Image (cartoon, rainbow, N blue to C red; front, top):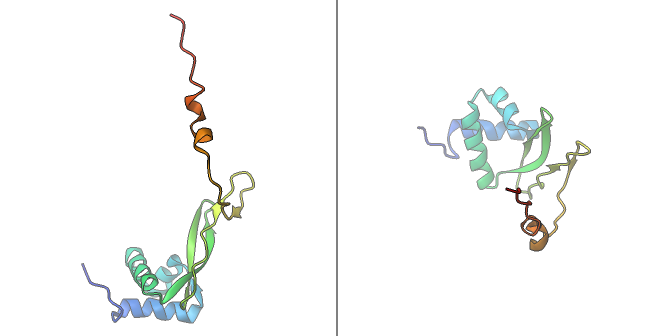
Length: 116
């Protein structure tokens, strides 16, 4: 397995592509750089860990999954949206604390036993 560093040609190519395009998803980077998908994912994780790129948004793919959009620079990452099943749109989660007595209410409402 090859070692990926900041000085490798592949990581420099991915970084330069993000700089030139402004924003890019992993699929776009695979198409533009002709590097394999697992290698692009590895390079993106490394660049994100070193804070050279950040997550600037999310894009819906195939109506069911969300893909990160990367941008060059050191900024805060955008929160990952969740999908609301009723509306079929993307919404940000509300922080709410679930009470343990409500979460375990099924314990108090046991199923009736069958008559023998």
